[in-house]
Amino acid sequence: MSDWGVVGHEWAVSLLQQAIESGKLPHALLFVGPEGVGKTLLAQTWSMAVNCLAPKAKDRPCGECRSCRLQAAGRHPDVIHVRPEKESVKIEQIRDLERKLALSPVEGRWKIGILEQFDKANIPAANALLKTLEEPPSHTLLVLTAESAESLLPTIVSRCQIIRLRPLPTALVSEALQERWGANASRANLLARLSGGRIGWAVTALENPDFLIHRESFWRDMLELMSSVYADRLAYAEKMRDSKTLIAEWLDVWSGWWRDVLLLQSGFDEGVTNEDKREELGHLASAIAPETARAFLGRLQRVRRMLRSNANTRLLLEDVLLHLPVWQAN
Image (tube, rainbow, N blue to C red; front, side, top):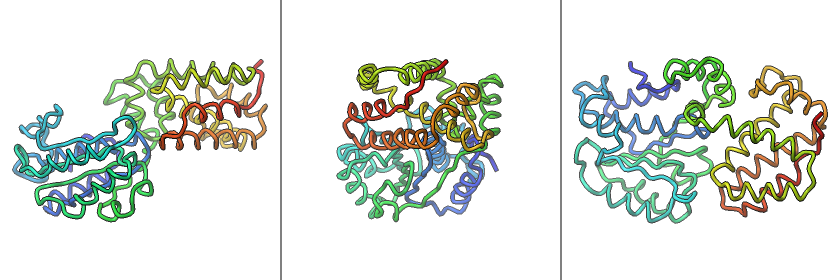
């Protein structure tokens, strides 16, 4: 059986392939897992497979028929993508999806709605989708992605077949970055460790030349702020508030460092992900009390979650920076 071009998640690919070969397709799938683990890619590949025109089900997706080529180019008329707009999925988007799904397929066997990050849908949008899930048109398939099933309405979850995707082994991510995306071994190993097994995250970081530059900048900023007065910390909060595209990346990077600090303090050296900064993190681990490090990591993670719910960005960032532990690097 083909791996569908998907790195890892073999059990999920096998399950979906069996559904295609049996002809018993779930009318609604829900892919859940950490951001960047590969949910959207699998959803797109599933969509390609069910509309593939290859005569034998075991050969789908073939990647060569008209339907596969249209979808690979992002121009398939029967595949409708719904993505968050300004951090949320809105009811107008669901209404538009419903209108399109009501039409008969043009190129493929199915009309397919792929709703990415549906945990960011507002309540009216979620309730609107529920009607389609309860009474889907006969020619319609839906695929939702979310970080967790618990973040969705239970009535939506109960109407979907859940596929839980978990992080991949670090070695597999590194190997894929080298063999499929041409990364050198050093960078592939670093990104694989930083990714925490999230292949999509690793590929995005590899293809974004600014990622490692930002990471170094965040490191210098953190060390400077740890020995700075509160006024400087508040000024940095204002700066980050104006850099909305970087906030999530910044919080993730800082969270990774403080997680490693706790691991070093606990003696779990083999779990450190920021291997290139092990020595510097070791200095932090020796200087900062474990309870202080643990509290700050918890604050970073809590703020990351709260930002997804449209809380006051400036106040949250100020809260993080005012609680950054004090330390003077040598």
